[in-house]
Image (tube, rainbow, N blue to C red; front, side, top):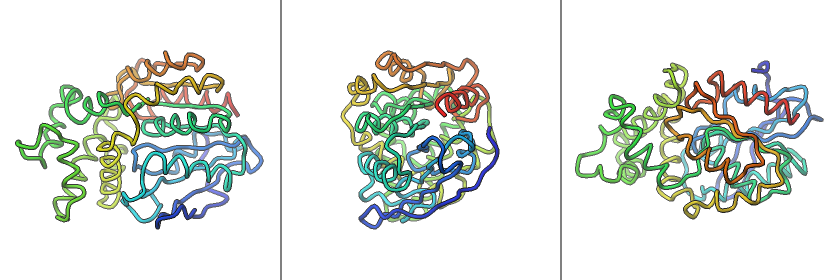
Amino acid sequence: MHPEIEPYAHDFLDVGYGHQVYWELCGNPTGTPAIFLHGGPGAGCSPTHRRVFDPKRYKILLFDQRGCGRSMPSACLDHNTTWDLVADIERLRAEILQADQAVVFGGSWGSTLALAYAETHPQHIKALIVRGIFLLRLAELRWFYQEGASWLFPDIWESYLAPIPQAERDDLIQAYHRRLTGTDTAMQLAAAHAWTQWESHTISLLPNPEHIQAHAADASALAFARIENHYFVHHGFMAEGQLLRDAHKLADIPGVIVQGRYDACTPARSAWDLHRAWPQADFHLVPDAGHAFDEPGILKQLLAATDRFA
């Protein structure tokens, strides 16, 4: 990756209803504008995310989406929808990045949000780089949280099932929702850690201790699990298949799609469906990778993409 860097500016944006969104600017203040969209939803940004852009050539905006990372209040679900986040991106682009167009980069849930933003405001997209494609269709949610991926990771799946009684296992996302939004603090935390660790243990082709520890702290696990589950209970606040339905709006946008062949979290079918709906974008199916952005084959393609659009 590119060298480690620190922000040259950072602050909070008041987006209303009590939400304070943390943002930072890194790199070259006169460089090509870029917006980084983190995953989850609810994961937040890390210093490593700054390093997918050449700091000499890019003016990089990173921000923690509502309720997670350094944004406040933590784990808040009120006024926290896909379209609230799209509105936040638009304000950050205009008021903080101060750019008419930007390279937009998103992975996993960040790819969902990048597509939603690009289909809403295509005129403000210089280029679109998406990785680990997640279209938030019901089949994708059921694959990872109800049936499908459990066949690949039966040992880890048992830990995911543990907080949920047998009688409630016909709809695990709803069962988790009851616990993550309930008043029993101990049960809430147990559910948060089980939900979070299921993803942390399955995102890479080979086990990675850094991924497993990424949301090990109580506050981080609670924000991640509550926000992610909130979005999934509401199907991303979108119509079924909406992102593919509206992919024709991306036709004039240069783009790159990067996908790990053995991605168990967001299987390659979704990336392929997006590739078919948006054939103008370059498509890279990495043969020896899972879901994580820092797996070598995926990272190589992402760095090539950011260098291309700099």
